[in-house]
Image (cartoon, rainbow, N blue to C red; front, side, top):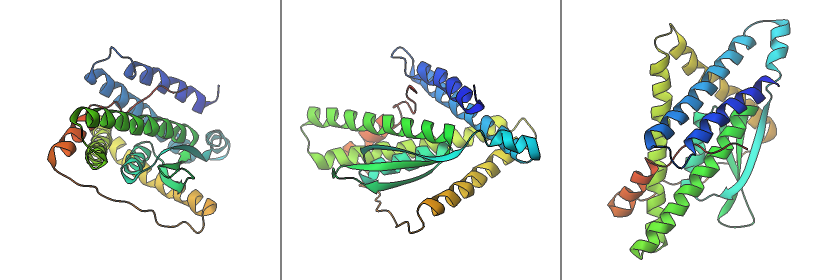
Length: 237
């Protein structure tokens, strides 16, 4: 198998564990942490190959940089989730409108393994937040404004968790001399390389419409609580 297929197979096993209904929250978070750590190490290995010459550079070419897309719910809070999940997995995120008003086409640009993983996990997390938000909205007999605030609370918590995962990866790597600094540098390198592809594919890329959403209140607190519990993983197929 190609290296990138092997790495996806390894990540899939970890995420299968996280997706197990019997897994505890700690087990799910640990599986997600291991998946991120595995992809981080893999990307560092690619960076090391890229730094050498000739034949080794050809090996790196086996993991192409590409655009992976998926169409699903795309209100501003959902795009915020996608952007942060993309960031965690070394990807550049952008979107385009869709004929269905609530949907958009999400694009994750990065190395093959990273882009596929980011797209699948982002869709899983967005749909999980939406499903739980609707469930609680019905229980509380609230309206769509309550639901939007709930979803923003969850999105903001996911952002915090993503940053914590990235920071903890740095901490776990600190025992190896220079590894934490190399990983931080590699995130920057991947960002720049992804931006080159983005500019090639979309030379006239427009600025997206965002939003911070309402913060505070019962709906926001409930959303943050769920955002802290939802597994940042899904089964890769």
